[in-house]
Length: 543
Image 1: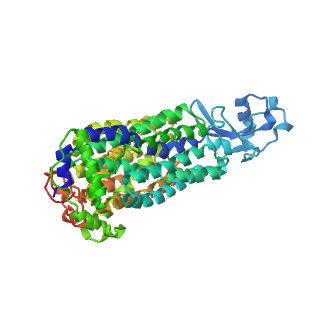
Image 2 (image 1 turned 135 degrees about the vertical axis):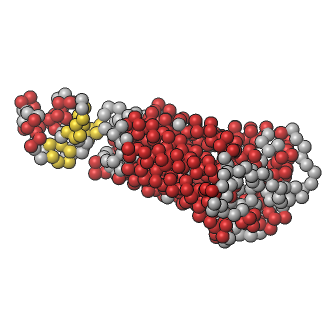
């Protein structure tokens, strides 16, 4: 009987076939998730607005505001006018040329009576300006993000069953179809309520659609190459954010933006006949013949000879006869604690990663540039993250990334009046959370056994999706205190960094196949007292 890792070593653990699949199929397959997770921020961009004053038509715009709108937060060399209040005066009954601006301060201030005016570049470019979702209705965009997160939570839960039941490949294309249909339909929404329903359809697939490219890349290569493919998939995701920043900057109209960020991904359906099913999943389902066919194809493209002997499938066929469920993740004590810790870390990482991405447009300055930087600063992290995961291991790299990111976010409390330093600390925090978000899914996939790996990853990511539900509320409540969301997210990262040290190291370890395999690796309650060590690859009968 041959172990799957032994077969991969013989036919090429990261050969020409795996590289072609990852670069040409899985790499672009990551982009739909990055685009659809954040294009809503720009479709619902809050524009500059002020009360409409029909009685002052023909009067200079600045003079109009001075005669009608109270000033707020006057700063040196600048004046900010109220966006939701106006003076209670009938301008049609007064002489505008003789009106004293200074005397207006004594007048009553009332909410806008005649609607709102928007800047020329904002009209029609946002759902906010098209449907007047401002002032008393300004919570609408936050509510839309919350509902978007709720649908993602439900989609993630279902995705685990689809991925482990139907396979990695069908799961991806089902979610891609849903995302493209609802994403394109978003551009045709006649009102806000239909728009929200369509965005919930898109949110149903986010971030579940990222699961297949990630898991499939991990399961197609040998243990020593899992770090490499993890880095590559995360580079693709970071590039998707940078690309999105360019697209939304170039396409300002929200309807065209919905099309530009959805329609191109229909081309990914052409990869159906090229994308292989995971041989690990096939073996876990007892489909040894199909798994061997995939492996022989890998060997042929890699120019290697398939080893003699049959692939060990006795455990897999036995496993296929059982009905695996989430309860199996909590059945044994070690796997139970691993599941709880990984799930807590996933919630922390998702909350902070999404929170910082949502937060970037509110930093001030050019919101498109801010979002571009938020994605671009992730790329340099891979320069040190790649060797760090191989030398320090997964656990210590995860801990250090979370602590550095958390400390940077907390440090903003000391420089809250300095925009440049706050932006710099924000970027460091984004680098930290980006690093930990690379390590955590990899470590989780190496901790959960194959028979419930999809369910375990799904459970952790489902709980993690609670973060995008409450984080928009945190950002909304902190709109008047710009650093409040950063302090909350920084604290979460610091606590998560400490908890990560409880997990066992998975560097170069075999992927566990059964529940018994996962139970053999104990938690490490003394990790902070022991220096990190590289674990040798052990031979076993697991896949």
